[in-house]
Image (tube, rainbow, N blue to C red; front, side, top):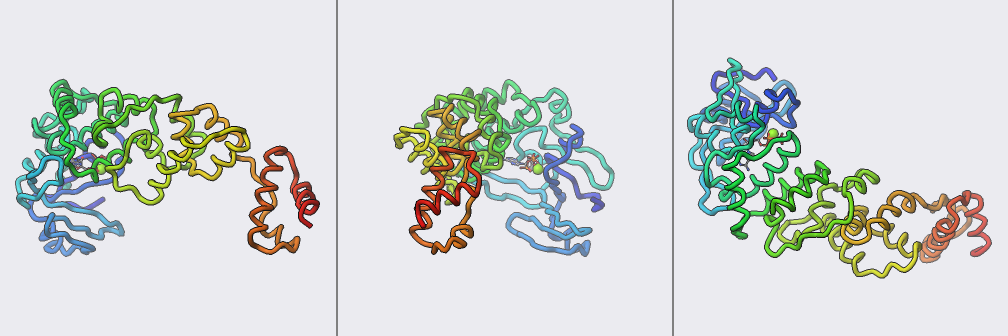
Length: 360
Ligand code: ATP
Ligand code: MG
């Protein structure tokens, strides 16, 4: 990226990643002053602007980039979204509102100088996550989940004072909060697909941030192993779905997964055929969650072996046999699926022969 100005900085994670020698997931720019005016005065191609937040999206060398004005924020209600206080504040004040010192550095786009007001480089060297002020977790508890995410991604640990602040916050949660950011961070964290991370989520009580009266699940085996058997899936919900997610604004697909888990828990699985049918109707994520809290070996067996058993005949084959689409179609598929289940080695010809024999 060649965009350069004496007041324009790379900021946050991108600076951290560069020092760590790692690629960045995204690049954040911040302009010391008003970014929208900067974009206009520099003749940049503006795609979108949001004057309330002082942010602007520009098209530069074929790429869309977001530039934020330096800003201060306040939290009139702890745990809710902040309100913008001042747009165009000094860079230092903008860096102060950030989550951890390691994410509070800026790098000047013109001179390449790294601005480090809070000993961030030292913390980065010693792999320490340190909040920038006492109220940080109370203001925004999603930072606790961010800390867990960064500890898993980079092997960072909490500095002692930050650890105490985290414990205090988790010991006295005000549940009147915005769950939007909590969900976003939970998604990013559990998409890392890590058993170790789940253990830490439970051990340190971070799960309490999902809502009141959470039960601690008794986990029967490795989530990673089940997930790795059936990629792709909505990875994060396999972990988060072990808890009560009623505070989350779930999509239809996500809430279906949770409903299916309830259904599987209620079901009476009396035979392998019965298990196969029930699991093959369920979203795969529900099968994994069910396995993690109830019948690990059954879920493993299904995901590893039974799941791939499927008839070779398809709808066209039935139409070619002169069978019309409708109720009978469904019945024939049920029949041939069960036959295939009993004898997975059936060839397509043998499947067709069985169908002809019974239905024609
Ligand atoms: P990643 O590699 O996951 O993108 P990141 O540190 O860049 O890590 P982003 O979510 O992209 O994280 O946020 C960019 C920057 O914005 C952070 O580095 C941090 O300075 C700031 N930030 C993000 N979320 C918060 C938060 N909840 N509270 C305070 N500052 C935050
Ligand atoms: Mg980032």
